[in-house]
Amino acid sequence: MLRLTRLCLLWRRPPAAGVPAKNLGLREVATGVSPPGSASLRALNIFDRVLKRKQKNWAARQPEPMKFDYLKEEVGSRIADRVYDIARDFPLALDVGSGRGYIAQHLNKETVGKFFQADIAENALKNTLETEIPAVRVLADEEFLPFRENTFDLVVSSLSLHWVNDLPRALEQIHYVLKPDGVFIGAMFGGDTLYELRCSLQLAETEREGGFSPHVSPFTAVNDLGHLLGRAGFNTLTVDTDEIQVNYPGMFELMEDLQGMGESNCAWNRKALLHRDTMLAAAAVYREMYKNEDGSVPATYQIYYMIGWKYHDSQARPAERGSATVSFGELGKISNLMSQEKKSQ
Image 1: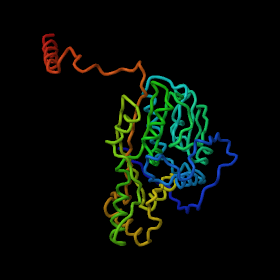
Image 2 (image 1 turned 90 degrees about the vertical axis):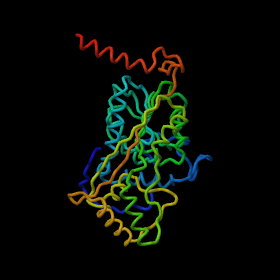
Image 3 (image 1 turned 30 degrees about the horizontal axis):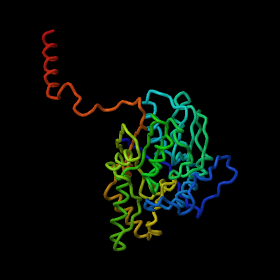
Image 4 (image 1 turned 60 degrees about the vertical axis):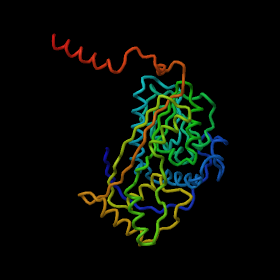
């Protein structure tokens, strides 16, 4: 488990609304961004996507956005490592929910020929990090990808899909735009993310106000993720989990950083206001229950990493049931024979 320590502190009050996208030099696709309030008919409308777009735009517009990039850069580098683990190059790649380009900066042009970076926040696309890979920036919603079938050799996504209302549809669209034998490599927050903050707020709000509302957005469970990938059409699946723990001076500094990352809660059922006494009580509970020896408080980010391939005839397939010529019981005998042979030598 990686441990980070957040040092620089600066409190900012967010503006009420974002800035419209005008003359940003972006390729904006009309069908790429969903109209306000739109969602798949089969999906639960959990998140306010318009508000999430404003939050991400505000975060990317800050004077020092890199101050809050530490978590997304770390996870982006781990996604890049998984791309390098695959012994091939990718002429055309797509980053779904790219933000400021946290994955592309860790890749080289020998591995990826051209990168499409898609995000709902125009300010994030305008302020992307430098990369040696030729990039095309597309203003598009993760739930409504404006690309044709069998377009990309590689699709990546880092810490973005946990905000979509219809995750099955988003995974199906990623599968749709992949070429046969293309690969999807993604990362998203897991269910134990920020459990310290969630527990502290619930205890304080219950004690001070007689009940609690959700202040941390819901996350997907790891045992559901493999099923969703399989249902979307992916095969040869790999799903693993990791934790990154970051130490903060206190709860308010953690909440400030979440705001600076564009990761503030945007669930429709969120409570608009927490009383000052409740917030102070939550900070005291957080420190009392979880503080480190040096006085800082930890925040745990659980990360799910997933890899899935689009089917192609050239891919290895499991043999038919009953086609084995050696039983598992005989494998033990082979091991014993090899041991005896080594001793005789």
